[in-house]
Amino acid sequence: MDAARMTKPDLSVNLAGIELKNPMIVASGTFGFGEEYINVATFENEQLGGIVLKGTTLEPREGNKPPRVAETASGMLNSIGLHNPGVDALVREIIPRLRRFDTRFIANIAGSTIEEYREVARRLSECPELSAIEVNISCPNVHHGGAEFGSDPAAAADVIGAVREAWAKPLIAKLTPNVGRITTIAEACIEAGADVLSLINTLKGMVIDTKTRRPVLGGNTGGLSGPAIKPVAIWMVHQVSQVARKKNVPLIGMGGIASANDALEFIIAGASAFCVGTSLFWDPSVCRRIIRGMETYMEQNGIGRISDLVGTLRLH
Amino acid sequence: MKTTERNQIHHLICDVLEVVSLEGEHCLLRFDGPAIAESAQPGQFVNVRYPSAMTGEVAFDSCRDLIEYHRTQPPPMTPFLLARPFGVHRVGKPGWVEILFKTLGRGTRLLAEAAAGTKLDVLGPIGRPFDLSHPPRIAILVAGGTGVAPLYLLAERLHRAGSQLVVLIGTGHAIPLAVSDSDEVVHFVDKDVTAVADEYAALGATVRIATMEPRMGCYRGTAADLLAQYLAKQPAQADETREIFSCGPWAMQAKVAELARQAGLPCQVLLEERMGCGLGACMACVCKIRQQSGEYKYERVCVDGPVFRAEDVGWTQRE
Image (cartoon, rainbow over the protein chains, first blue to last red):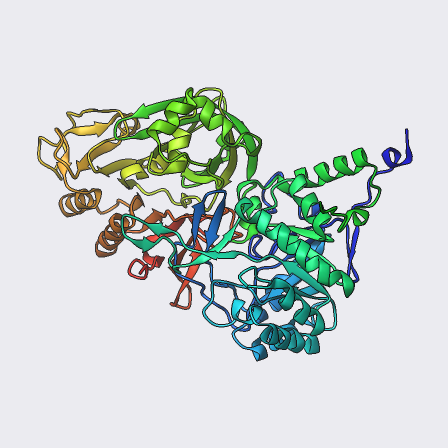
């Protein structure tokens, strides 16, 4: 028996100083504020490398009017619209309750103005429970802010720069796929001080009810997620990894991951960690299966550490 | 509802035991799920889909003929991903659960094609159940369409708790339950309105059915119309407590809530909304609910409901 089969594969990851027990994180907006899945018998927060909390703004937000989801071919559209209780409720009521879970917590912040992003980050900086902040410059479901910032390199740099001033720990910039050249935005975010890039957020789309000739979603348009977007996400992770690698900036890849093989694709494409999101909605046991499947893959391929697999893509 | 107040949610791969097609494209599906059968409370729901590893194959196997399937259902459809929520209709020993639904879209149509032995991926029971801490002397159950499904489990528990049941059912035309004529004399409808749903009648309930299309033995109108008749013609006795329990389409329940308010009766309503996760995480299935401060805020139908007090629901705030 060779050494690789004797020892358990090492899934731990160091993401710009954040030590994760494994590279599997749950994506912002798909996991509430960290507690919603704990009543499910087949789920444990402790199996996760990390949890990204739902997007949080300075003031509470009501979000968009329902219907807020629509199933599509191999995916779904959502139009939640940053429904959240505001940063003060997060700091006072929610984050203290998360101490009991042995995993890493990452806040996701959003705003309509650069000043709002900075202030939310400043207020979160008093929470020792948070390992990092993910800056959402890519929400497709709000009229001001969100993807507006993420689709212009200068605006993206301004937001990341402002948050950087207010937040000392690792800073993650979450990129939108709804742009012409994602690498330009990625470079601007790195230049402005992002330690990690996460991608992709949802792809903007619309579903129409042919009976009423109106959009199915109350917010008219929504963000597409699920297996339908995975090839787009893989391609973008690969592209961004080419520029991020030069600056030693790790990536968190996401978009349609529903199996260990999906997750491995992202890692090979260049992501150091990955997020599971929409697939949790239909299968809460997906996380368990992904970890098991990754371990099996590593054992079978003689890979001792998952970090050795990152960016090992061999193009034709 | 806080996570600490919620019950454990089981995640099971369940065998379908029986699928029965009922009139009006309704379907009764029974599956084996002991953990859910034992713990489900009235008003709670289960999230049902085909198991991940089998998505597609199961649906098409049960179709027997894939080509025929694609001919009758153009264009070819991908299997559905998101689980579909269904109120628990009945539970029984040894450990089975029944759901009753109308085939409306892709998900329900594929589920209706399941057969005995088909595997289903089921999460449940989920949600805030009906509050039965003070069972009323007379429980008035008002069901619109497939709203009759989750109210059956409630009727059973209320019956067990000693409540006298009045069950008012409204449908378009098709009634997804066995129906027969009753000779019980009631004073709130004409003598020729005699149709009752057998399984409710078996609980000793006074049952009447309203249909939008004319149908022998049924009242012409809605379940809310039946309720208005009942409340007008059957005033409460001095020592009687009465409470209304309702499930059905939004417009019908809004009328039921208004009638309850006018009559000064407590009323609990079971709401439906399009869901993403069904577990409280995605914030998709929201509805405006009055807070203690008096202002209305979005709450999640899946875990803050699906049962709410009728007076708290923002009935006019949907658009």
